Length: 176
Image 1: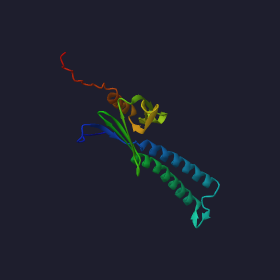
Image 2: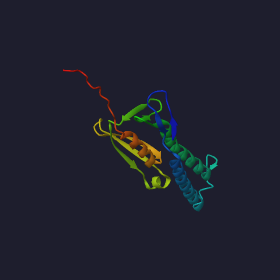
Image 3: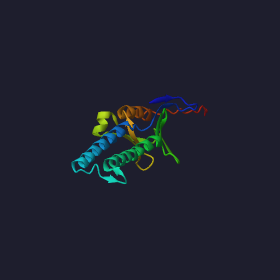
Image 4: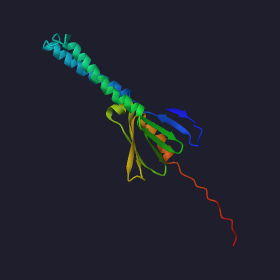
């Protein structure tokens, strides 16, 4: 989490992006296991030394699995660069998109509910998703994806969103 103070009246408490390291590790582990099983089966059935276009099947298997792995990681990197979450002292801003972007500003008046979702791996590696429900838009919601330390982040959001709003009214001093 980074703390930044912009020039305007709304102070930034932190700025986050999706935490993709657990996804990268999980996908790497899965692709390593699958590739190992495929290579083992190629050796078992003697297909590893067969040639296709002058290259062994073992080499083709490794190239194909590496390409599939890289393409699967591309999704995570796109998610990381296309989502930004900014908590300010007066609300939370959720930015989505790369070429064309959407920006949602949720202030405490529109805030309804907050939900933290963590899978088993999310509890072990301390990451998860946070869903923010909004009153003003027919019970719509905004999702913050792959958040590192989601319980702490949710607590920070609750502190900002449940802060009472104080209005100062001028007293009418007219005499009758």
